[in-house]
Image 1: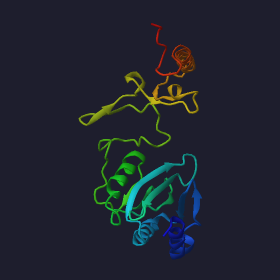
Image 2 (image 1 turned 180 degrees about the horizontal axis):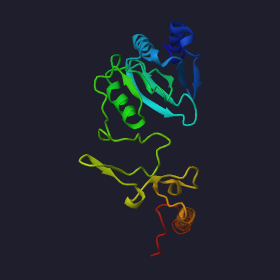
Image 3 (image 1 turned 90 degrees about the vertical axis):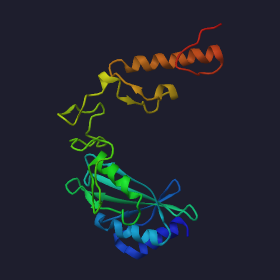
Image 4 (image 1 turned 180 degrees about the vertical axis):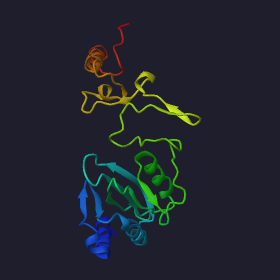
Length: 222
């Protein structure tokens, strides 16, 4: 069964609950209209051969409603066929059924989404934070969470400081002239353009002297 055939089978089973299959860069995706039915759709998908849950990821559609999109990446181990299921969840609700009863690998995926985005999974038997500590009041992957972080002081538990003074945040410049210009590093807004141009010029010097632009800066002639 191909991915498109599988998608059509799921569509035939659930009717208007499922969108028409879409294809992008060879990937077949179905949208599940009612997030409360996602576990039922996943259970059927497993029954037709998608026995491996590769990943669950979440998107923050900040400024839009519904705010969250949860994506399930499924694979049939026997032939490598893959499809994706997507469903939307409102910020007010921020909850959908766990698919842990379908695939045990959902355990950590759902805990990570809960920890980083704040989306809950009803029926999950152990929905604890997996990266941040219990009691941490924020969700770091939300788009309204500052890149530099937020100071937190929970006496007797843990604390965090805003990161620039500690050597971060490490971010990249999209569309830089080369990999050195794009590489993740500390960005200081008022000086970044000057610093980036200096690094690009240094790589130009490298290319002139050595024939290739390797390294972060020029190497003197011997």
